[in-house]
Length: 304
Image 1 (cartoon, rainbow, N blue to C red):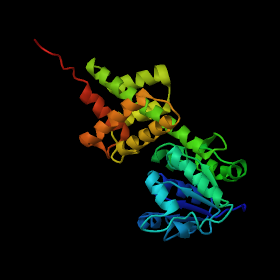
Image 2 (image 1 turned 90 degrees about the vertical axis):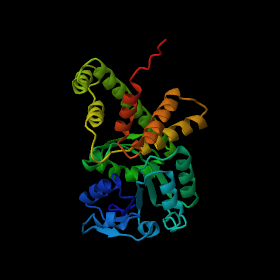
Image 3 (image 1 turned 45 degrees about the vertical axis):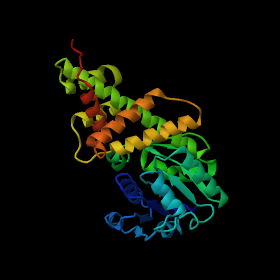
């Protein structure tokens, strides 16, 4: 790969757009593609080229980053669908596909196999962090892949993040780690939600409870940020309940494939499904869980 590789970013939603802007700010020439062309056009820069299809975006790229909503969107962009062909066969041998999205272990394995058949490379590199964190270049990335292509893309990943964890040579294991991490975030949200409900029941301001508990016990920026999100719902969700449902399902599926059962994950799946049924599908993930915790709080005592 050349010292200044040709880059492409496919998927310019709340996470993909800030990543593209960071790559551009670091002096790279980047080809952009998004199903809604307006999102690509909104990233105005002299180093930007806008492609009309995933295949066109990938044709001359040394490295293609995908940041797409879910498995279905990733499959459509890579393998193609009824609307347009994917970029798999347009990507030249030795080029590298970096999957930044949260996708299933099964799909990650399929992507690796497809690239290997064509002499291409797959790096699994899902990110931890919400859109504001991505905009600030403060994501944490977990990355897996063969040594040489991973070394080639590592400077690019470092330029859009505050750090990396190198997991293994198997791209799917980076995605498995991300799913496990998201499951722990869901657990933290549930703990905060029920803690706030408890504080309210005792006449304690949840914001005061949050500040005291985080200072005394966790001293965690993550606990601080999610607590504030729960108590002060953002106008634009950083991640929705629908995404939480998807990520929890993928974690449970990966666990089942490995022959293990996670009872907390079953419970979280139920809570998130109830949040969706209650009308919070597009609300912030943390807010949706909190609303269900609040609705579960009143005791229903049987009377004689």
